[in-house]
Image 1 (tube, rainbow, N blue to C red):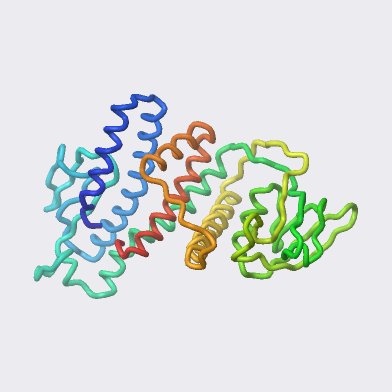
Image 2: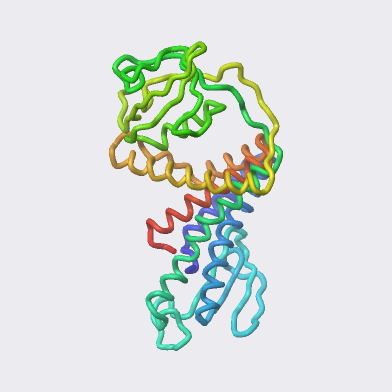
Length: 319
């Protein structure tokens, strides 16, 4: 909402210097994709501020794509619309962000109106993932298939105490069907500290057990104390129709919120440390995902980045 500080400019210039030094075509492609993704997320964020400001008749001084210095701009209905030199993100500058006696300034609006305008950006970043996840599910993409099989159970672990044995196959967790290792790991991490119901297949027998994944497992063990591997793994190209994809998009967004929350709780409990990547690291990951995973994977990554951006803006009170 506010014009961003000089940190953004410094980061951008730093990335440009790296590109000049390395002249790596893959690095350049990664940076371009990264700029596109970040610009999409920030422009969506700022567009929400713009629309809600218009609704509540707050004067918009300038709305720009990129960050100054300004390359081109024009004045329309007392608002400057600009395209700026640093092609990453965007901004909306409102009258009365600091203080103003003008009746059409932000500072003169009611508390509720100011809250809606300020919160709208983060709200869009938390809503946008549903669209992105849904789109990723509609695009044909490869999925790893293979029922998770228990390959080892640590003694005196939740899994051991609940009766899980080596060779058991996980069929579902809390009623959600499991068809690959990644989904099993995700559902376990989503339910740290909570009792979960696991449906297992042991030889020709079907069993249902309850256990509680730990927040702080001993070193070398996971939350439940098991190691798993895919049984007869293979990949399959899948896509969903609009309604299936939308439903799965909502579920995936909610799952990601829960995983993000649990990760933050783990930091405070001291059971994990923040794994932070700088702009270059994120750009490299973005480019690698786009090259190896295709558009579907890129949309999924963008959805996750959008959730992170929305939550971090709320935590830092920079709506």
